[in-house]
Image 1 (cartoon, rainbow, N blue to C red):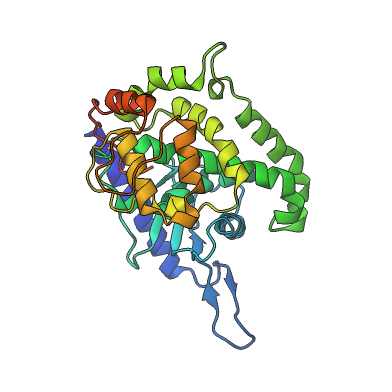
Image 2 (tube, rainbow, N blue to C red):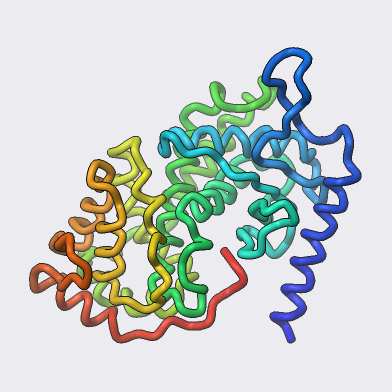
Length: 321
């Protein structure tokens, strides 16, 4: 009953968005290709709604800026149409597409807390760029925690990026005074205690203790956020994140062991773009897989990890995240 009420509320939010979008003639932000040409919508549109003291057109400027900055790490990739609405059920990206086949994103951020918009939207945008809608349904996708972790890592990266370059990247000059606040928000997020390994515990030991929980419950935020801190240096070491686009290619089987899940990602990714995938194998102390299908874990450590994480069954999930 509770799940049905949640879904009904979400769908009502999105229905009101599309109704507002068709009725709104002057509120959307546009740009021109050339003088005299018909105005064209930006790829990310924000619906009027309960945004507190922030306006939809201001948020739309910021989210398009975030999209532009994110796409610098995905050369050649274009943003799909995305509509964004305010909802207490956010942040999440819906599996259901809109009436024009656009992605639908709900955010919980409000008012002029611009850092929260950067943080939330970066996470959902990476889900889209990773092809979240190509994978097995959440109730079957036993390694979805890894995608959630990647999205959290991208959020941290973008927060740091905007905190260091806010005066250059802020869509409006009058927002430049917000720079100290986004720096404080970023520092607070990065310094949270649960994001750090316990004293005298290696990441190997921690993952051996917690990997089974991650497989069973992909939305264990604090555990995902700790792994994200381990992964953040990898994103910082390369400007090319295109490997993430292949994370969910041919990923409908639903329940592979973690090593096999990463091995499929490795084989799906073109060789020139594999640095991020190979670095992931090194982070977990896995040997690189063979190019052939049906890989066996290379090395004792990888075999043990694969066996341990291969015994859990994924739970029923949520309507999107």
